[in-house]
Image (cartoon, rainbow, N blue to C red; front, top):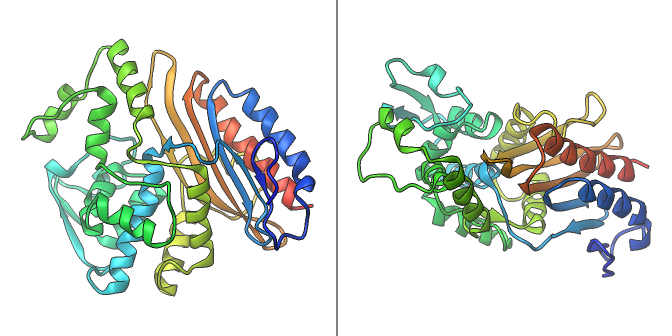
Length: 325
């Protein structure tokens, strides 16, 4: 393997030489330089194995990107017969989590309701619903079981440690009491701006619930190969990822209309002009039918929402253009 300035790698089986990735390397470097952020990048042509990494082995907070490995572990348990996609899951007021998605709360009456495991996976992955994510995490066996599953795939550098509610508390720098009701959360999840920013900065530096771009690429490759789950579960996962509605301006933002993208986004909080993360990882299908894995983590950022999304979109478009030649 050859290593270039941005840790550009080329597998032994690749048709092109590593030097052919020079134009892509320069284009990505220019985008990163303008980002006002710490940017982790992983790009891989899954047909040739050609790979470009920027901070590829550094850890970045996943935020909702971590819902993808959680969903995969639940689907593994479906394959094992321990869980069924049609199983009903009861939802109580105490299960509701803060977040912008209403995929679960819109289904509730008086704060209560029932959804199937399949519906919760779609809500967690495609709509990034935090309530759905914390409901399926126990079905996965908890955070340690998810991390163990990822390790069983031969992937190091990606770990799942906390439910959404604990991550929310940690980004506020608060400790939740032993018992609380859903009506208590607005009062509990609050902090002065300076304290909130300090908590967010601590969160970004925390290795928990983080991944490296290299590990994210490895996970995407297993999703694309459909070999980490049964054929039925692998197809269900890909269809769900293709339904993603969050972050339309990220990987999907600058790609040609009609491009098939199967992706999972993640977004961190902002305080005093400092944003924890805007992330997106996914599979982009080229006109030739080949797939490119894209993983971009925009962290510790002083840029606004649109600029962070644009950074991800430009890097994804650069990969699309390069490997579509």
